Image (cartoon, rainbow, N blue to C red; front, side, top):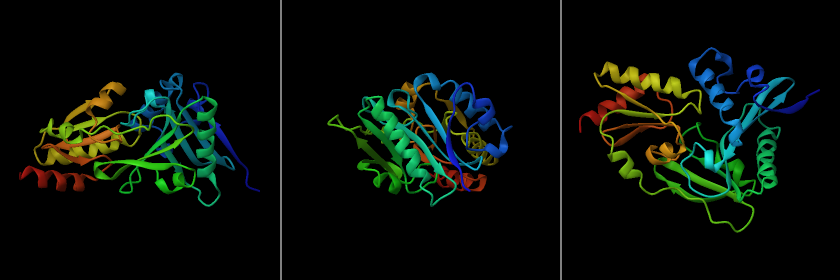
Length: 254
């Protein structure tokens, strides 16, 4: 018999339960940093909820008030979904997690719930499941980013900034923007740094310390990871060392 239930992480159970991503490598720097980051975010209203099937992790959702969100989107009194991932499909687990977020947002009298998607990477959720739950696609940003919102009333729409080109042009040297929100950022950083080193290119690391810095500097709506070189976006998700070298070589010729 299949038994499913949810676990909401908090300061009391996080050391035992831990986050979903990179669970198989609990000694990895990214996993350790992610759990530490979560522990420091709970007081801001962040929720990290795992769905379990027969005591095995089946999926999770992470969401937080927009005022402390790691996504580059503006608005007032919204909830923002950072991540949604389900490893056991066909059982309605994604819908169960989304509905939990929607109910939580309504109980907190939020204006609605936001999610940022991108069809070009698995590092963001797929928009199709959200469209089935009354989310509307209302805006786009460069590199395939989509802004979806489920509004509960007549509040003003959330919106993306429109200065993406200016953000990129400000950085000509190889620059990596990052936060610990995703445990795979550590691996993604290492791959770019290693590829750059083989090409004799020095990488500058900028650890975004707060939402104000993220809103000001992030080169994409994804917020937590971005690589810029010669005023161009290299990546907003993990590249292999080979892929990073290929992209850097293309831009170095300009």
